[in-house]
Image (cartoon, rainbow over all chains, first blue to last red):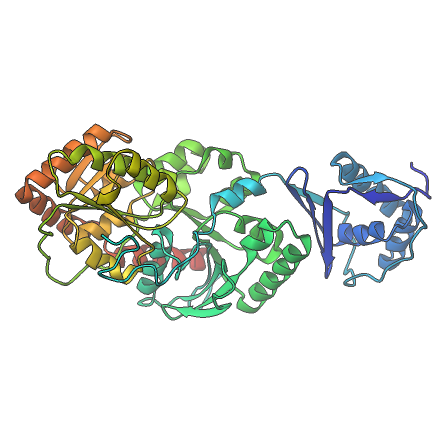
Length: 147
Length: 373
C-alpha cells in the first residue's frame, strides 16, 4: 500500500478532460486514446486538482458511501495502470489542492476503469474526409484547363 | 422485442451527401429506395466542413451532422468529450431500435463508448476489403462480432471478409448496391475518342495507370483524349506523369463534378476507364453501363460482378497497362463492338443492380431484426 500523502502529476504530453462524468485522455506522444468510466473520471478530476492519494480515496468513499478500503484498493489499481501507461507519475511538488466539485453527481460505484484505444490512427485513416467539396469546380462545357 | 410501430433505425454513415463518392451515392440511393417502405430512420453523418448544416433532410429523412471525425483527429480531449455528449443526447432523443453502421471508422469509438449504442442490435455494411492494419483492431472486431448482420457491397467483399473473419461467416451476406436506371435514350458516342476516368483521385483508383494507358494509345489514335473527373491527392502526381509522358495536353482535369452532371459526362465519353487497384463494387461502372458506355477495367474486387469480360466490357489483370491499352484500342478501333458491349452492359445492370432490390433487401433486414430482437 502506498503512502497516503503521495500525489501525482500528469505527463507533459498527456491531455485529459472530464465533462459531465465522462473522461477522455489522450497521450499525444503515443497517439493512444483512453476513456474513463464515471468513477475513473472523478478520480481524474481529483488527481488534476493535486489531491494526495488518501484524500482521493476518502473523498470518493464519502461521496458514494462506499467502504474506503474498497475505494482505496481500486484507486491504487487505477493509479498503477495509468503509471504503467505513462499517463501520470508520482510527484509531490507544489501545494496539495482542494477537493473540486464533481462535474456531475455520481449515481453509484463501479470500480474505476481505464480503456485504451490503440487503433485510433487506423480508424481515422480508414474513413478519411473527402478533400474539400468545390460545388462550382465544373460546369458543363467548361474545364479548369482551357483546351 | 416486438416492435408494433415501424422499425426505427439509426443510420450512421461517415461520408454522406453532399460530398460525393461511391459510399455517398450508395447511401443516397438506399435512402431514396427506403422511402417506399414503412421505416423510421435518422442519419448521423460526418460534418467535415463548418458550412454544412448541422440539421438537414435527405430523401425525407432527418440528418444530424456531427464533427466527430474532426474532434477525434484534433487530439482535443475536451472536444471529444463534448461530441460524445452531443451524440448521447441525440441517441436519447431518437431512441432507435437498432443501429445500421453504413461505414466503419472512427465512429466505432463512439459506438463503443455510448452504452445506449453498444447495447443496440447492429447491422454493419462493408464497402470494400478491410485494410490490413484494421483486421486486428479490437474496436472493429468487437462491433463485427456482436453485429446481427454484416452486409457487403459485393460478393467479392463478402468472400474477402469471410477469409479474414471465418467465424463470422454465417452472418456475412452480400447486398450489392443498386442505382436508379436511366430512362432516357442512349446517346451516340463522341466523334473523337474520349476516355473517362471518374472517381476519387486516390492511389487505389489507379489514375497513374490511366495516364500510362493514354500514353500508349496516342500513336495509333492521334485524337484520343482523357477526361479526369474527381479530385484527391493523386492529381499533382498524375499531372507530372502526364507531362513526363508527353500527354499533358491530352488530359482534362475537371476536378469535382456534381452527381447530376455525371450522365452528361458519360454521354460525352467513348468509354469509362477503371484501372482500379482495389474496388468494393464499382458504382462508376454501373453508372457508365446505364449510359450504355462500355467499361475497360481491372479484374479486382467487385468489378467482375459489374463487368462481364467480353460481354459488357473488357477486363484485364490489375496494373496491366499494356493490357488496358490493348483493350481500349479494341474499342476505339471497333465502334460496333463498343456499342454492343455498352448495350449489353445497360441490360445487365438494369437486371443485376436495380435500386429496388437494394432497398428492399435492407428494409427486409431492418424488419427481421425489429421482429426478432
